[in-house]
Amino acid sequence: MTGRLTIAAAALFAGFLAGTGPAAAERLVTSISRHQVLVNSSFTGTSIVLFGTVEPDSPTARRATAYDLIVTVSGPKQIIVERRKERVLGIWANMASRTFLNVPSYLAVLSNQPVEQIANADTVRTQQLGLADKLLPQQLGNDVADVVRDDPFRTNFIRLKTRQNLYLQRANGVTLLTPTVFRAEISLPAVAPIGNYDVDVKAFADGVLLTRANSAFEVVKVGFEQFVATAAQDYGLVYGLTTAMMAIMTGWFAAVVFRRD
Image (tube, rainbow, N blue to C red; front, side, top):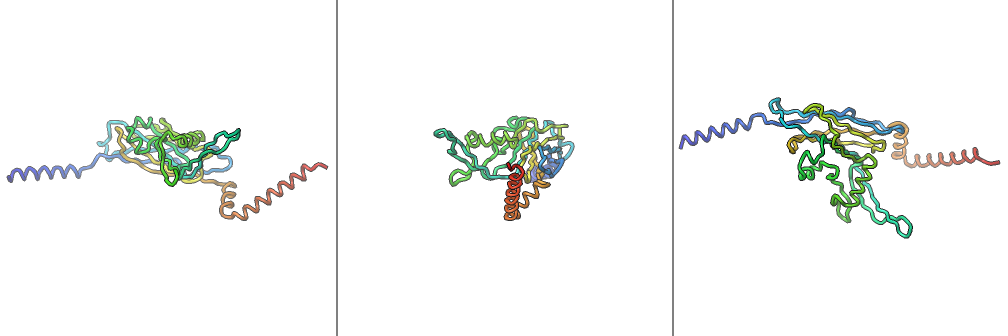
């Protein structure tokens, strides 16, 4: 009996030592080319470059299989009302509408290969990896929820955002420079909304999420446009009176110049 207890104690102690040893794990280290984008009247769009590396806890823990990366960029949240028009008696009229609540004004999904090849369908859906899998809360009567993926309003919303280059998904958006070093280019169109943008980076291997990292940047309006926007927001009455006087003076000047004697 004593011998059995000694063997059991030895096995337990060995298991304890194994459990306290270094675990094989990875961590993401990312760097973004700039954390602020300045927008003025001549802004035509720009690109931000994200660099990163997947670092194991120790060189001996390096995986034999390749890593997969998914970079998701989300812009400021906004409320959008989408309306459906139909022709009634020769006149186009709004027949139905849907309100999207706190949805990203900009949404980009960049990966080194199609997300369907990175993880299984359940993981893609639950982790919201693809553009079509992102939750887009909508006002449905007294409830707020997302709908089925082929809902006409939802499909049209994504289509319109994609046409404006505000929603995009690129299966070749992440380039692996080495087995552990990667690069991604974030494209911002001329109509990129002002505000904070969140960057979420996920690293996968063999279909399993290993680690993730977050970063951010800001799109800021500068110059005369920022002065006008600030004046309209902080001094609404003065701004309104000033613009009304400018309109009157412009009309009077045009009437004098183009007056026919």
